[in-house]
Every structure is written in C-alpha cells, then in structure tokens.
Length: 496
Length: 121
Image (cartoon, rainbow over all chains, first blue to last red; front, side, top):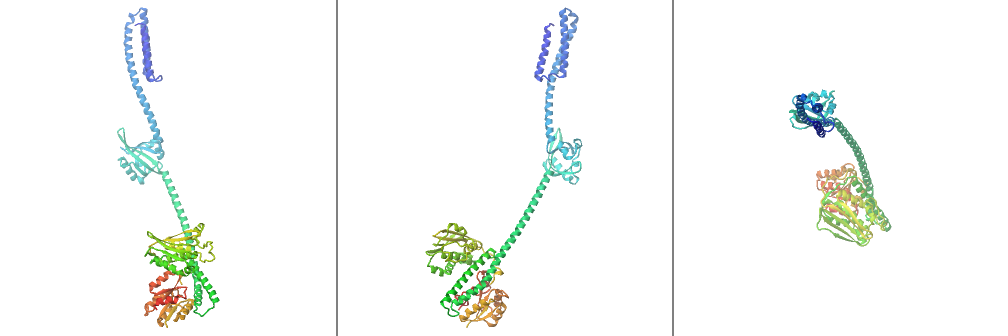
C-alpha cells in the first residue's frame, strides 16, 4: 500500500456520502447501519494508514499478516456496506409508502370521523359491529370500544326488531340499499329514526356491510311542524272562507230580500194603479156617458200619467226580480220576424205620430228557441228609444246570423249619444242630458233592464255604437237556441 | 143575453170588469173567492168564466182544476185574468186547461174584443 491508498479510501467515503445525500437528502442520508459501517470504515482506514506508515518506516514484514487480515476485513466491510446501502434504499422506499399510507389513512379517518352521517361496518360473519365513526358513536351514545362487538339487535328497539333485522338481511343480500325511517335505539334506550343506506363490501377476504345512518329525527320534526303549520293554515283559511261565505250568504239574502221587497211593494202599488187606469179608460171611452173636452183632456193626463207610472213600476219589478235571481227563461219556438213585428205594432201610434219610416232587414224565416216575451221586451225597449230620440228620418231593425247566435240591431238617425256618455248607458236611472229630454219620458230603467234580460235570461250580450248628432245602433247578440231550464219561475210573493 | 161569472177578489177590478161587460150587453154574476166561484159555476151554469188567478182562499189554478173535474167539465170557456210579468202563472193556466187569458191592467178598448175571440163569438 502507498499513501495514495489513504486518498483512495477517503474518496470512496466521500463519493458514498454524496450518493447517499443525493438519493435520500441530507437529513435522512444515513440509517443507523450506515453510521456503523462508516465508523468501521474509519477504523479500517486508520489501520490501513497505520500499515502504510509502518511500511514507510520499513517495518513491513511484521505486520503483513495484519494487513492481509485488514484487506480481507476491508473487502467484507465493502460488501456489507453495499448490502446495507441497497437495503436502506429499499427501506426508504417502504418508509415512503408507509408515510403515504399513513397520510391517506389520516385523511380517510378524518373524513370517516367527521362525516355528518353515522357510518358503521358490520361483520357479516357474526352480525356484530366491527367499527364505526365518531358520529355513529355519538348517535348511539356508545364509546368506540363499547360499539365494537355490539350486535345488530342491540341497536334497534325490540318492538321493531323483526322489521329492522329483515331490512338488514335484505341489504346484506344486496336487494336494496336505502331503507327509510328505521327506528334506532341509543345506549340509553331512547329511539331515533334514521334512513340507512347499506352496501355489502369485502375487506381482506371478509364480508362486511357498510351502513350509513342519517338521523332524520330533525327532518321528521321539521316535517311535522310544517304539516302542523299547513294544517293550521288550512284551518284558518277554511274558517275565514266560511266566515266570508256566511257573510256572503247574508249579503245575498239581504240583497234578495231587498229585491223581493221592491218587487212585492211594486206589485201592491200596481193594484190600485190598475183601477185608476181601468176606470179612467172606461170614462174616456165614453162608457159612462158624454164628457166635455176639458174633462177629456184632464182625464187623458191622469190616464197617461198612470200608464207611465205603471211602466215604471213594471220595470222596477222586472229589475228587482232579475236581481233577486227569480227570472228564468221560458223557452219557446218563435219566428224572429213575428217578434219584431209585434214590437213595431206596439209602438205604431208613436211611429205614426212622428212619421218615421221603419226598415226591416231580416234573414228569411229565421226561427229561434228563446224566451219570446223577454226578447220582445228587449227589442221593444230598443225600438221605443229609437223612436223616442229620432225626430226625422228612419229606424232600421236588422238581424244577422253569426253561427249559433243572432245579432239584432236597432239603428236610428236620431240625436246620437256623446262618446263619454256611452259607458253610462246601461246603468240604472241614467237619463242623459239631451235636447229632447224635456219632451221624452221614460223610466230610466229600459236599457239597464235590456242588458240584464239579455245577459241573464237570454244568455247574450248588448252593445251600442253611436255618433253624436247622427244616430245610434243598439244591438243584442243572443244564442239562436236557448237551453231549456226548469219551468218554475216566479214565486208566491208576486201573484196577482 | 150571455151570462158571465167573474171570480175576482179585488172590488175595484170586479166593478170595472162587470161594468165593461154589462155595458157591452152581458149579464154578470160575481164571486169574490174561489169556493163561491165554484159553487156559482155549478149552480148558475154561466156561458163563460173570468177567473183571477190570485184569490184569498185558493189558487186560481185550483179553482180551474175543480171546475174542470166537475160535471160541467170542458163545457164552459174559462178566461184567466193575469198580471203583467206573471209568465209562469199564465203558462200554467193554459196548460191546466184555460181557454185564454187577458192581462191586467184591463184595456177597456180591447178587453171585449179579447173575450169574444176566446169564447169564439
């Protein structure tokens, strides 16, 4: 050996160091084994050098066997060193895997333990709880150690045990996963309800059932509270509705009574009026003997006023009867032309007095199934208005078929109606301001009555178009065939 | 001279109708309620009957039915006196066997003509 051998040895050590540091980092460069090996290496180098020094001093022969022994020892050391080095490489790999496993387990465990739901692992071999998470322990009120080894029947109430076990077995067979609303018994015997989601798993050759317990007690409580609120709300609504209905019934009854009152009141008014009209008429007719012109004039005024009053009363009766819901349609077949001609005939005096031309535009032979008398009343109202408010010109009655309906219009060349007055036309007791107002008399109910009759008895609608100063067109549109209703119209309060 | 039975409870109406009838050459007998009306109809055998449908003791319809069911069944024309707007009664009376109706208020000019048409003179 020469002194360069020292350098050799030191170099080897340095290189080994460098490799270790590179491979494992400064901190973890040496395991305990490596440290021992290095220690021996240093001793070896020391003796190695000792040998060199002696050789250098010329005392070599004496130490040769030692040096040989050292050479052999050194070789063994190197082999041992490489073995250890390789083993350490493997060990470090294992350490790394272990660390990773540990990290992974920590993560899993923290997820497991912090889950909102209780998780339970049941050994399917002996039906005992194998493990559970913290949440599960808290749910059941057991410590982890107590939990392990419990049987299925320990965590369900006896009364429902059969059902719970059945569910367990079927989940274990994988028939279904989610079982709802299962009663679960705590350590203290109290009960809570859970949805249990279970799946069979195999871990390390053993079969388990992983069950996830969701405590639905709060949910159930909330649901019950909501149900309770809903029920109370419903009840409240029902009560209020009932109150409203009662009030409504009372109101309707009052309204009906009012209308009834007006109807019967008017009826009573009519009886003496009939006498006035009758006897005045008899005298005017000369049946009681001659009367002079002044008497005739005055009696005629009595007669006309009584007639007007009667018309007014009749309209009031009609309106109040309609409002009291006492008017039903009397459906009969009739020819529209006949109805219109009757209306014209009723007004012939007025028409002749004014010298108005009446024009008819009707579909030939049109027959209707409707309340003839009410239809006549409506047409009569329109026609008498047209005649009343037309001084010169003509009145035209026109009917147009529109599918199942017919539209009957009465147009005139009269004074017309201001646009702003149109919406008020069909309301009761409206008398528009017109230049003819003083000369014309009416009940103020005619159009309102026509609207009511058309809508509620004839099941149609009314409309009007007008140009101020030019004339108006009043129309009703009614079904050609009105459905028949019960034939029990007016009540006892209206006899006479 | 034809004989008319007027069954009417209102005195004014009774006088008016009878006055007009008499002025036109009819004789009249009067009943102010249904029972008397039926009795007079059977006893006096009038040529026609004017029957108010609202009577104090019974419905005009009932009077009509009883007369029609008696031995003078169908022989005597019966004319109902109905009020304006009493459609229901009017139809019921016709259906029950009335020969016709006249409306109140009575029109002195037309009433005789109406009666004649109904009784077929």
